[in-house]
Length: 112
Length: 114
Image (cartoon, rainbow over all chains, first blue to last red; front, side):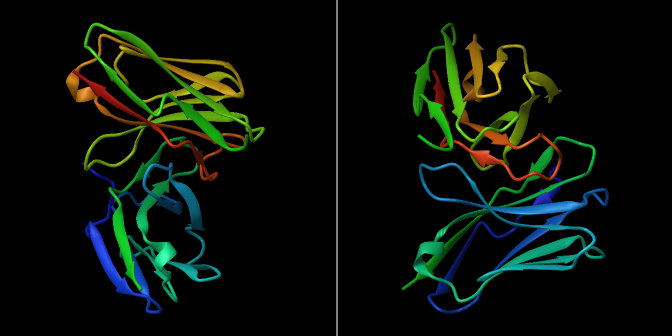
């Protein structure tokens, strides 16, 4: 059973608007979360992370929000740019364990 | 060359073949990983090496055999694979192998087993 779920396989957003990508998890032991971005024919690249002691982390246009009670996190991209078009993966893990659990990804398309 | 390099990019093999996937990292990291991504499934961790010692083996069938001769190189030896093993195999590295460290991925090897 998947421990990290991204229920929206795709999302289209107009350039300049906000993109919101969602992720849900089931394991309450997870205490750190990461987002990766993947372009075609390339490996995933790290984007931003958050630990369970925070509820928000910001890096430029990218902000990740964590709602531990709902076991939900989201990635906000504002303003969205055409170069942001990629597949975004959410991942979660627990301290003391090497395994990182990934979602199936959301394909973001930013329309110029 | 920088980052994490994987070869070959594409591989087609029969079920009786033996082949190897190669990964090299130029980042000075101490930990290396093999991940598998099947169609419409999440990335799954297969193996973790930290300082050339295997620290994780996620119940992977023995037809997959990893090798880490030094901290810069990682191999995945394949033999008698099944068609369901067709997938994208991604290598990654991280600084120390601690949980939560960001991973640096290669571009992957797209494997097709006929």
